[in-house]
Amino acid sequence: MKTLLLLINLLILPFPVLGADLLLKNATLIDGTGTSAKSIENLLIRDGRIVGVDVKEPGQDIEIIDLKDAWIIPGLIDAHVHLSGFEGDRREMPGKLERALRGGITGLRDMAGDTRVLKDTVSDLHLGLYPGPTLTYAGLMGGPTMFDDPRVLEASIGYAPGEAPGLRAIDQETDAGKAMADLKTTGASAAKLYGNLDRDTVLRLGKAAHKAGVRIWAHPATFPARPMDLIEAGADVLSHSAYFIWQAVPDMPTDYNARRHGPYGDYSPDDNRYQQVIERMAAGNVLLDATLTIHYDHAVEANEPLEGVTDNAFTWATAFTRRAHKAGVKIVAGTDALFPSEKQDPEGDDLPNLHRELEILVNYAGLTPMEALVAGTRNSAEAAGLLQDHGTIEPGKVADLVVLNTDPVRDITATRDIRMVIRAGKIIPQK
Image (cartoon, rainbow, N blue to C red; front, side):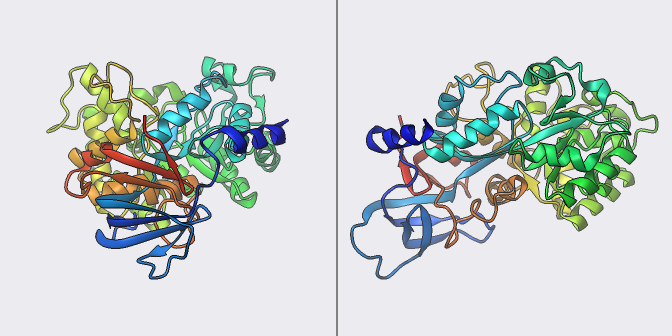
């Protein structure tokens, strides 16, 4: 059936997987590696991949587009979303992903949901049944006592709580190697270590994961395991700067529901215990998925200060992110919610949340606009396990590009001013 649908797609749909060969002329290139922007005569795309910059003899039968001094950046990657929403709603997926793509998002890292929905979505995208970003995703692992969470239960319909291969309860008797093998059958490339897991368990899971070729994406505290425990377990990416507060708390809760109630006024992000965590992350290339937008929205809603103090989740998280960034930890741009609510987006510009996350990284966490662009492209690709083919504009990589009308290095809000999105060499029409 899907083979038939693919043939139909290629005949009648305006979004085939690969576009015609393209020559983009007269632009400023920001390649995502952090090197300075540079003016280019052309950028050649062939068979959906980047051939090179300033090609002297591009060949024939190529579509030529004069960008007239626009800016080209790599496609943006949101490194923290929940596409299935723990609801398994397949019907909304095509519209949601096309909207994200038109908004400049060419890659997504899903942080656990219904892996059945996610696996089918990846298949549909590969077949070109509808346009959307490249997608990677994790399965979730946690202690048995957290599997009464209604979100997890809804995403596990058809299985007893904690027995779905992509939503697995882990206890001292669990065969960690088998759990990782089962996880791989879901198509997940990573295990998300989430809640109610102690130090010994996360160490055991980390060892089994890396032996099986599975990445570890985790919260920095899994209650009672602390950030340093997750680092020692070999975490590849730790999500939520605000949750690093728990490293210094002497009486660690054993229930992951405590994560939202950190004692921010009691512990300075300048405490040496946090510096030790940051140094270990930098030395071990553990990426930091800061997810500041969600805490910004909470702070605004609660009328909490956004600067000058560290007594709430947002201000503490931005201070920690700033310090980690200065120490050389790679910052990743993730949002935890692909799109803003109507209340969070009163302008109604229909753009994904990642544009807001980049702005917050610049305005509150000390990144320059160029550094924020690297966070939302190259670093997010690394976090998602996509860096080999995505995240930067280099020869041989997939041609996922966003063309902007204004300079994002001068003003990060320019990422909103989209002229054109190119996905695997195919121009995605803007509405």
